[in-house]
Length: 193
Image (cartoon, rainbow, N blue to C red; front, top):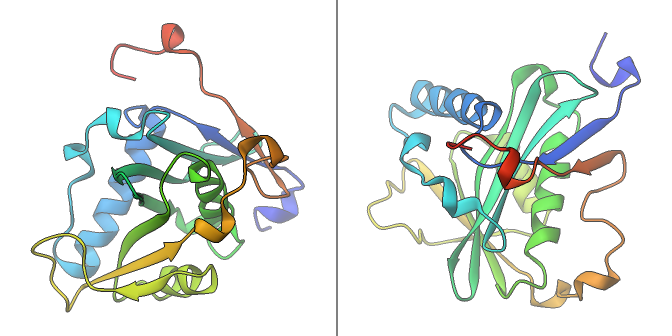
């Protein structure tokens, strides 16, 4: 039985980057990157605040009330650019369009917040991610991160000026088939969340 045959609905939840679910998924991503490339940015080195609204957002996805199986976030890179980071889908959830749903929700959240472009990086061997990003309108660019190895890293850019709409005109930042749930308010989070 595949995950979609279970008849449950994917839920995208905005969470602090430091939550247990976010950290478990970013550690799994890190391990896959190390196994594939021998090197990777340590997700633990990223400050939790980099994904705090209004300058960022971090999402986890789960099927029904099951465990978190995917994640992704965006953060403000500079006055005109947002950066997509830590996109990951666990192996049991791959091939079902979940990465596309997360990417669309993140892009929608960026709209109207000031950036006119979205940048991201992925590895040369991540064929599925490269295909997804290209299909979603991202174009290759020279690396925007100093010191990146061009034999490993691929940087991409998407101009979102054409997509800028007021946030009031958007029915939902989450694509059909998903729900966006809010994380607990800051007073309900743990000190490290």
